[in-house]
Image 1: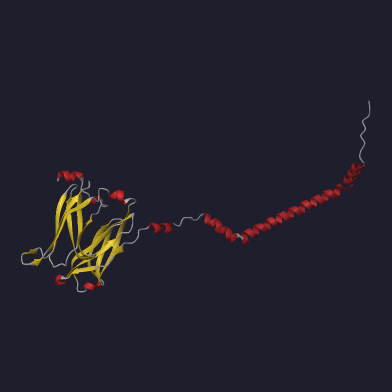
Image 2 (image 1 turned 30 degrees about the vertical axis):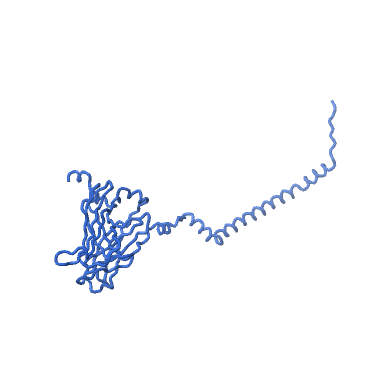
Length: 290
């Protein structure tokens, strides 16, 4: 049997001898390094923790508190979506026979998706309330706010105040109003005071017309403002209320002015029908019974 012999390099012997002779020192050195490393990292952790709490604590709290806050400014959204106020025109004081006047003002609803369902308005003379009434103004619509035969000694100081408005959101008024606003005026005729004089020679101007309800809905009440124009200026106004206006009905109407009026160039008939109030629609069964 042959002996196996492997010669050992001289540098390996020297390395082994050095390790054996310095083994204890190496252990102490490694232990010391680990202790120092642990102390440094622990100190850094404490320092960084204090830095977060003291120096960056406020900004961190702001960031974390912001996470629980609403990112949407709901007040700004409400302000953008709320209806635009009605545009109120100048008050016109008409007549003056025996100290009584007709008060007229145009009011426009500029909103496309908001109906001024119930507008309560007052004509005032200083602090005195001369009259109060209600009206309805459709989206993108204009209505005439009137008060007739008002007695006042300060006609030049009359003002109009909108006391309250009940707004109703209508996303698509064109669709909603289909069939509900199919009220057409025909046979419109104006007779001035020079052409019509009643017995006793009292001046009398009148407007006659026919109201055609061409829609499928019937209404308990359908009001109409009648406005006389001379150019662009309102020189006369009147109002008529038709009760139980049936679908398909053509009803004659007449309004009168028992006073002298200037020459008239145009006549406007403006419907005032609350199509938003379900109580204003005639029930089909009630119509058939009537």
